[in-house]
View 1 (cartoon, rainbow, N blue to C red):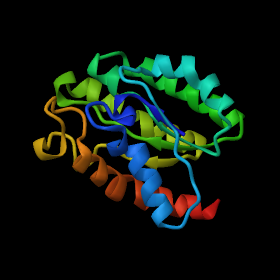
View 2 (tube, rainbow, N blue to C red):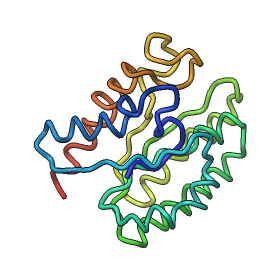
View 3 (cartoon, helix red, strand yellow):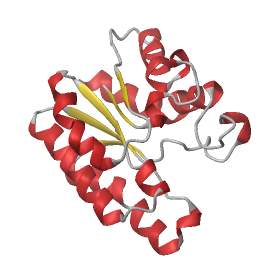
Length: 180
């Protein structure tokens, strides 16, 4: 299950251009028999994730790709709250014996250096705490590149999602899945 916000849902692109769809396609090319379920909700915050985690668990996933926190950051919600919410979500998933891959997010410079410093440590800290596989920055190489984003400048376009899958997720996820 790809559990996240509009970056997961594929806001602004066709569903066949979203990262969960492209990821499933790439994993099948690697001869892995997988189904990636897109459980992205546009506008979702980490609090929304806390509210939805039980529903995600009801789907009985083998692996959860957790990508939340971007909307919290864009709304300048306190990093301590983001951390607590992500910790709660991860704890629920881990307690249910689910494998979790954490998709990291970084703060915009517009939030200021103190906010950025506190926010940017959340994902690595939680990955270490729970011994999770971590994609350090989901949007690495795509953020702020007009040719890789939709007209809103925030959400990846098809080329952006292809880059995310091929360069950010697959190098980390594929070895992890082959170990399972």
